[in-house]
Image 1 (cartoon, helix red, strand yellow):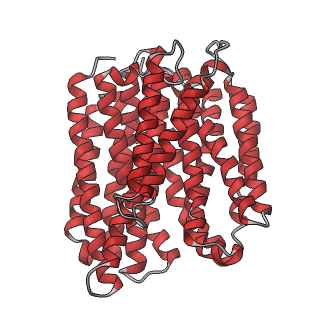
Image 2 (image 1 turned 60 degrees about the horizontal axis):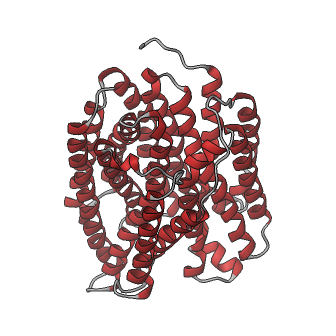
Length: 463
């Protein structure tokens, strides 16, 4: 079993879909660097320009839950072609945009492409990779998407400083074209499809859920919690979630089979996966801001400081997956999450006086832990589900990943903004204090992920 080979065609299919997912993450993180430039060029406010990211995340979060239905209804190659062409169309529109609404429309189109592509990659791995090699290949898939947040800020800062923000889109176009031709040659259909009625009411529930929750968390830094923009939006989102769950229970073919969540082992993996993603995206906001506002480094240097950790962590993902294939999931996941908790605890304790070198070293340690644990949590969680529910489980994990990213960023930014707006002292001191509280919250989330996995392993079935 351990000597089973992965077909080169399958590696090509993962590469083709992974390049699309990677491009989506790179653009998302690179565009954050361009916000001041875009505000000046298109004469828009901070609140308006933030929709470049918020709208993209919202669309991705709404499309990802449809992946289980799309997989049952359409062929993998059809989905790939649509996703790739949508992404290319969005890139071209943004590269040539003359107004902000056109720029926003291009980002929305890219969101549809990424929302289809991201779960497609993991569905191919689950269906076409031998069971004994799934851990390693999931690690490779995680590497492809995890390297994006590392490259994005540096990539965006370099282009904005030396060329023009439009090159963020132009340079990615050749990679999408390569992805297109590789995917056409390598993606094959192994599962049968069937004509299935699409439930638009369930889709409406998904849209209301993520629109309400993402908008609510994104508004935390600008509005009081007990306001229509925050609490009102969150209640609206929770009502959408209740509607979606109720609808799914009474449908013969729901968009997502919620029976996956009824599996306690998978449910605890899902909780851990969600909490780990909160720490990852939250930390990717805290550290660059700390480096710029507390340590007085440039945006480009701040991107370079976190780059080694992200690269090391991403490179460690397939290694962690290989450990899972050989020795099981418990060792790499618990050790990896333990390292995440320890590094976050040290960062929290030293948050008022973190040096550039200290941030670099601690972030490398943190990302090694993420590399060992993150992809393996998904792999082991999906192993707890029967084959008929794996696509639904994959959709749930990818949807939670998008939501956790928006939630983690919103929470830590609100904490730091509240600290900066109150008290006495310089901006550097208030930012350091706010960062300490934000890191404490992320550390608690990391500890919650570790405890969730301890519980999950008690429910695990032997596979």
